[in-house]
Amino acid sequence: MLSRTADHLYWMARYTERAENTARMLDVNYQMSLLPQSEKTIESGWRALLEISELTQAYSSKHDNAAPSTVIAFMARDMDNPSSIMRCLQAARENARAVRGSITTELWETINTTWLEAQRMVLNGRVEHAPAEFFEWVKFRSHLTRGVHAGTMMRGEVYDFIQLGSFLERADNTARLLDVKFLAAAESHDEATDPVDEFYYWAAILRSVSAFESYRKVYRDVITPERIAQLLILNLSMPRSLAACLQEVVKRLARVRNAQSADTQMATLNLFTELGDTTIEEILEKGLHVFLTEFLSRINDIGAGISQDFLVPLEVAA
Image: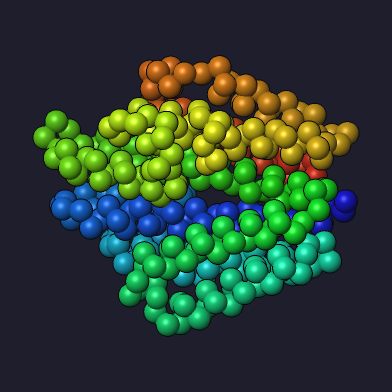
């Protein structure tokens, strides 16, 4: 496969997944901002979201305070923000258009329709008037895109590069979501925190990654931060966990490997193996923030390796 074609497929998938995960992070922050809490705590939560998304500088250049409506607008529909939901949907559509001959008509039409409908929703003010509804719609369209991809694409290199982009992006975003929410909990929760508020906080995180029912099936008990971390980091049966995402990346790299991808394959396999050999107690003893920061750094290195080995190198593409 030509590196340019692989590049478009890979980034089409990454941008689709990124739009969904941005919607998930915004949704959980929006739901939590509705809970009783001080304005300072609310603003701190939104600033933490900008920080973990590496958007603080870009946001601060346009806005003074981190009001929920302003952050939502910036991360959902601001076309000057390259990581906003709308920019991601546009980029996914443009990458799909470039490889229309490699993907099925159904997949192209799904991605194209998503972009067209998203523009109409933004023009109708859906982001401002019903943000939760807009986020749910973005998640649904991402699910639909993956379903069409799985149901219509042949299991060849095209399929593999789409899967590779999807799961690498998902691992990155799950790690970011965990990091920002556990940091916020460490700063604002103490022994005086209302148990009801505590429950809704952690339940909202689980729902943001469609894991609430899965948590109940696995643990059948109260929701605790430690178990959430274990479910979303180490549980291979949880489709959005770091371990499950890495397992899929390892599998796809083995299928598309070439003469120069050995180092990237080894780095991915090492990270996956280390997760399998680690317990949640060891992670928490090390420090969850330290662990997730290191994980994100290694995921970024793997992404750079994939670009160098198979795609248009990031420096050239930029």
